[in-house]
Image 1: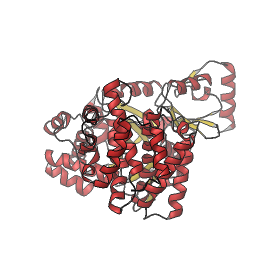
Image 2 (image 1 turned 60 degrees about the vertical axis):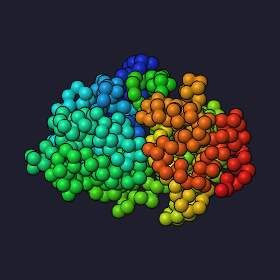
Image 3 (image 1 turned 90 degrees about the vertical axis):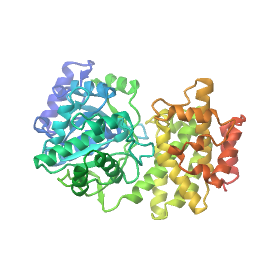
Image 4 (image 1 turned 90 degrees about the horizontal axis):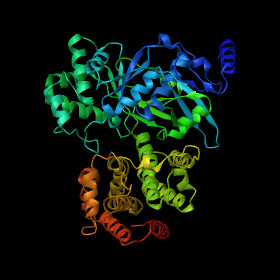
Length: 515
């Protein structure tokens, strides 16, 4: 930062000691010196990226990489316009508009050090609920060269495994019949691409930020299944012309709490929706962008011809490991990942799961690479400053288990490997689901699209131990796999008989968790 700007900020802060400053463009020079602020001219910043589904993760990841790029390059054509499709997005829309689309990134290090940084890469936020035509007009504008998206955060109706689009959902049927008045993310993508094609404007790249394997290929498949029903000619054009790069994105980003907001106010900044995260960040992407992209590789991203190995390692070790702590930890009564890992039993169980049930299925990667990432995962989960809530990890469990744990189980079954450690996680989830029904506890987090079906299955487990496994949209054909069924039935029965989760974890570790 230039000395004159620093001096001005020091003087301005001395003029109003102790009074919290509202975060907005006008007040940037009034923020405490501990807060790093954008050094580029935001008045000249324009949007080249449009992001649908502006989650906390996106604001801690893609938006931060882009902010780094803007700072380093001075190329101000790559700002981000956020889009929310649903009424539930109104709060973030209101907050960002009041704050000139600025927010604070709070990075919490394991040693207690905390860094505060104002992110300036967002330049606008559109709420489709208020003006769908404004969203379509922005997406159709040739200045938008990348549309990035998070399907889960956009609230759209895909199958819980992410394998297929629910073409019978009311909103999807509406979009198929009324393409100019879309409701879903797929309706917006189709109509914007139709307009660009008809106007002779090249199509934008569609960049998935979803935490699934081959996320670009998944979005391509879902979009084409939708457009093929609506406009086969457009589907052919999209298949030939639109780029869908696969990518792996990684950064633990807990849900923002009232304590996080209060912390900033104590420091002198009024920010209604900051984002907290760990210092670790990783981004590996295919370099398949039809209309260019920011040179994110200059600020830490990596581009590769194939990202499958890295994404599998991340999803199975980190996201799968999260589920182990989330479901076993919540059943035990713990609240955060670091609280779990202060318990030697949970540390040993997670370590055994990662080594015995995940590492063997990552044979395409070197032993050293897997071991290093595995150890990094343990250290990241231990971060006491992050306060990563198990309730966040357990949200939308049906989707997460289908994506992050069931594939690991299936791979181990195919290879004759261990599945008992994962089976206990599924059994713990089933037991927690049943408690939601019988005790009206907080066993199931709100928002799971299959909540009613899951609760009914869990409630029926006392009469049919395999009731939950019969929910094929989550478990596929696991109910037909004898090795898994035997382990799961034994463990879930013990839980329903009143055996404690610690006792079962200790028994599995003592037995070596072998088949």
